[in-house]
Length: 423
Ligand code: HEM
Image (cartoon, rainbow, N blue to C red; front, side):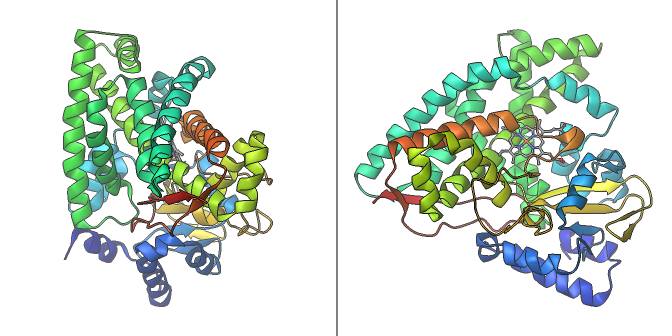
């Protein structure tokens, strides 16, 4: 029996009919076809109520207000190191990659979370202004490249632009050598499996190997920056942590976890936002055309993309006590999976939720909420807005050549290609 199958068998508490329904639903969702359009599957799940039992134990939440309530409440905790250890050896939660993730910022709970988050000090207005010019330059360069390819016919915008911009921006900000970018991107694609909803044993093995390589890479980086501090975030974190922690090894370890997580958090998610936003607009040519004449609507288009199909479809929490959620009883330490991709289409929250409409100014949970609200949201928005702004100005005639392919995942959306041409 594989590790992931064992997890399912060990923790089942759901009535057989519900379990069968949810199992068939998730096997559809985890395919490339399911990822190309997961929303009808979410609608089926929602028809069972805002909170439904998950086949492997725990609960699936599709109601927007309930998801919002959970991310904002202190009664719900991240599945931290203590919780993961309780799940026992041989489960996905004690895989080396999961243990490593349990020490990064989004897996911490207060009080540790509070001081680590404060130490990160990411992206205030001043630092964002510095990054803005660099983001604009990188975007222009990548679009020059795209223009050259389009001159000869079609081009893969995902590969040429969406995969490149986030690593160029975060790599430059962290002061990493550009020669390392392709490897860092590959490692991130593998590492993310440990954060997936139901990783298979082989996916976990890939994630474990990627995590080990990333540990070597970023511990070396911290060592180098300690020896030769510069004007960069890693050197600044070393200074901050030296003021908080008298043991230098522990300070360096804390800086390593910050650098590691910032890279992991910044790559796939932003890439997916960039390509999904372009895809949605090419699928809605009237709105694309409108942007070409009214580019001040670009921020609104990015927000609607974040609602309509966010890069992360699942956020998980565990209950700190026995409670009731959306009319369902939940026991202490049980997990809830907030299916934010589904919650964003909740008709109780948004009118005509299946309609992509950049004029709606939507509430969304793409960047979570409460104390774990994404620290990189301003940067992700900056990249998406910069790209879209330049694209509608330079390529008003852009069209889609064929439907793109999606990676077979559930939590972290990933487009594999986005083939475009000039009409
Ligand atoms: C479109 C792009 C992005 C999306 C959709 C996204 C999404 C998220 C979500 C959903 C969370 C919260 C997870 C939870 O509640 O458990 C989160 C946390 C976080 N994100 Fe992002 N993110 C994006 C880009 C970035 C970037 C570019 C960075 C950094 C450069 C970043 C850094 C972080 C950090 C440090 C946290 C942890 C916050 C905490 O736990 O206190 N993210 N992100």
